[in-house]
Length: 366
Image 1 (spheres, rainbow, N blue to C red):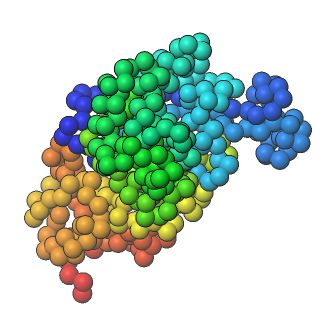
Image 2: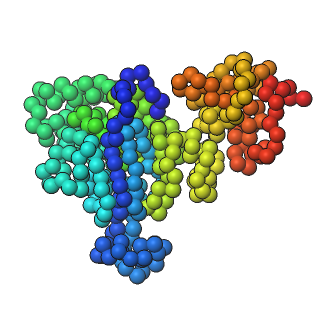
Image 3: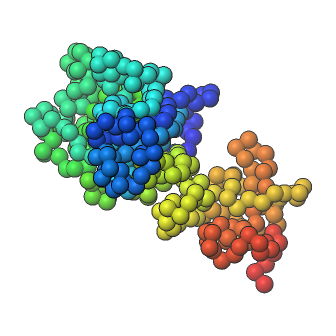
């Protein structure tokens, strides 16, 4: 998500730090980590040891206010990994810090406190209490904290207004649509004002239209609240829409981590390249991916480095002179070239190759 004017000032603090996290399911997992068996293909490892490796030496950090998306196919280990972060699943090895707190070092009391106050999770299956009204579902986390009924209901009403459900506070979950139930789940997660929000395939069970509405809801709330978000999905479009950074996961490992533009514009290997093959590149890639060095030219106009190429096509093909690209500090960082734009939009196997000479800036189509 782009920076907003109300975002916290100063350098971002790391809210989630994950270092060398392993999760091995099966008997004596520590023995698997201690030898070369851990590198065997999944089927061979299971046959030899009875174990499966779901997370392999995963390390990453998430900064305050960042939306970090973990995506991969079913069985890639993404849900296991995020559940290891709060020890819903116990990691086999590694370290996890959330808001500076050593999660793996927490005793049962400290872990409960962390889950109640610092981290909230939104799951694919909404997990609402069917016998409780909407307002009591939203207020549940505050009830667990011992907040008085009047105060927790006041907070719940604030959040129901934020997600557009004020009119149904007295309804029960089975009286609501799937999208409305997920909004209740989102309001419940926000009610305790957590520092970290984790979405585990939260929208996967929703119809496509409702799913897009919930994605828009997350974007709207993030613009306002600036939470630190880990979002797990198997849907690339969802990842590209929501993520500041995306981690592509395969067989328990991160294959590539980068911005949406980096994932689409510079895939790390054939696996990622196949993932992004059908993505409309112009809607994701920015001017930075088609910028060439400049040698003192004076551009007739300038564009921002993070402007999407789809928005720049009329500018590039209508210009009579050089088009400058400026960074976030307003300084000129290079020039846009028509041939390079076409090449970048065409991808690595597009209509041109890097060895071909570029059109002269501002040249006609003749």
